[in-house]
Length: 456
Image 1 (tube, helix red, strand yellow):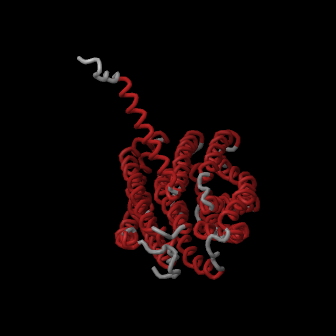
Image 2 (cartoon, rainbow, N blue to C red; image 1 turned 90 degrees about the vertical axis):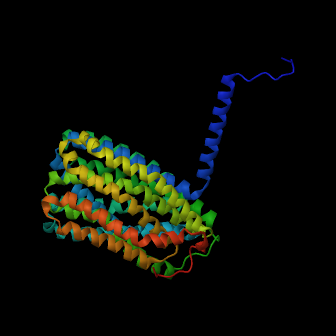
Image 3 (spheres, rainbow, N blue to C red; image 1 turned 180 degrees about the vertical axis):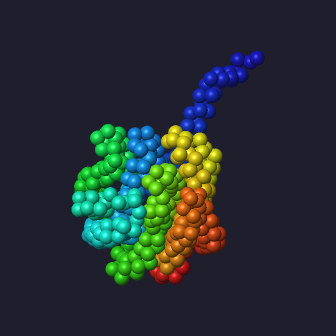
């Protein structure tokens, strides 16, 4: 062989070179993905959902091990009531929709939303306390001045806690949401164990709400002193500010739709808790909470789509297509894995949780796919300010689910609730999918924010 023939590269060097090239390609792919604000915001919110889910599993595992199911069910019924009452007046989608456009008025806009939302939450909480006798044994311990005042404080705090996540998202700083909620999740797990011996009857509720109350001051100092001023400087004059009339018109429809959506998640379990004993409610709660965690994938993508459509109304159909592809890619395997594994996974919480909760969780996991279609279409409607359609769709979800819950016999209410959720969402998804497909069509890539009208 001639001395001029090139020597072959050592096999190890070739493998190393291919590995290095593959890593570089992967890093470039990740960088490109995260350079898109639509995905960056959505992935931050999905990370929040994933972290919250993992910590939530640990939290409920410890609750099942350290507390009697009756105490878990009773405490969670109250927490669910706080979430319903406190979140009822949280103007989250208004914040997400208009913060990108408010410029120097962002601070006043957020403060007004905080004041209106939290004040109204306290008023509604008072109404709940006045009607306690309607809500069954899981809420009986709220009678009295001390428990009543504590319930009002919880409703006020939860409202602000809920709104501040929307503020982070609207500011395009959604990466702070998983950081905040990771700290919240870790602290409540520590408190749950710490309270198990000293306060076995109230430890679940206290471990959940004390971190919320303590976190409000530092988080909102950071928002108002650093994030909002930076946002105001970066966006002031970039686009015309929305007028008060435009905001009021939007809120008139979107708030009603948000109210229905909130009630679908948080009122339905309160209605179920009013019909069953606290122990059974613990089994229902475990499945319901885990099922709602699965929905975070599509909800967060729809929220990110709303923010990006408000910031930049060009090439909106392309953004809708991208959001739909990512949602399906992530959600299908997660839902399938949940359906297959949950009967075995829930055994770690105890036999009652698996026997009664697994069928419900399987139905809720199956419902996440039609829910994803609905959430993304609602994101399109929000960007286009078509709030009447939002209210109609969200109202149909709520009324359909509640109708099933109220007519199903009490002894079958867990499985009946799951069947109702799946059937109602499948029917609505079939109805809205053609419109979502049109919105994702390249020929429909018109300005996302116009025209401003309430029609569906």
